[in-house]
Amino acid sequence: MRREEALKILQQNLENQNLRRHCFAVEACMRALAQRFEEDEKMWGIVGLIHDADYEKTKDNPKEHTRLTAQWLKEAGEDERIIAAILSHNFDYREENPPQTKMDWSLYCCDELTGFIVAVALVRPDRKLSSVTVESVLKKFPEKAFAAAVKREQIQKCERQLSISLPEFVKLCLIAMQEIAADLGL
Image 1 (spheres, rainbow, N blue to C red):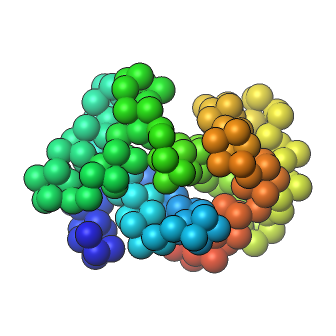
Image 2: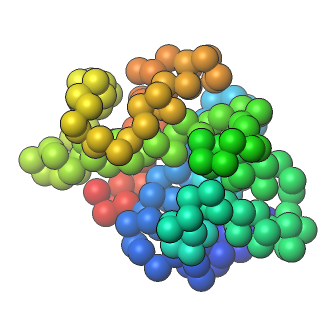
C-alpha cells in the first residue's frame, strides 16, 4: 500500500482533525521505530497512519474498533502483517490478536505515548512541541491526574517488549513528532 492510498482511507473515514493529527503522530513514531529496528519504514508508517481509520465508526463499541479497518484492508488485498498490527493495537478491549511482532508492539506502545506528548505540549506556555523535552514528559508521567485517560502501563511495555527504556522511547517519539509539528498544529 502506498501512503497516498492509506491517506485516502483515513480521509474518507475520519473527519475529526485531531484524530487525523493523532494518526500522523503515530505514523511519524512508527517510522522512527522502524528505522531504529532496521525495518520497513514505509510499511510501519502505513500501519501508524491508518491504525485508527475506523475510530469514528466504532467509538461507541470499542470491541469493534480496528475490525472495519482490517476488513477494508483485506478486501484491498493488503499485507497480512499490516492487518495483524492494526488489529493488535486494540488487544486490551478484545483480548484477541495480541501484539506479537516488534511492529505490533511498537504500535501498541507509541499509540498512547503520542497523546501524552500532545498533552504535555498543550500545557506549555507556547503550546508547541518544540518546547517539550524528554524530561518534561517524564516529569508528568507519574502524575495520574495529568492526561488521566492515557494508559501509562501500555507505554511502559516498551521496556519489556521492545527492549527500549522509557526515556529512550519518549525521546525517539518526541523527536519524530517534533519533525512534523506543523502537520500536528503544534
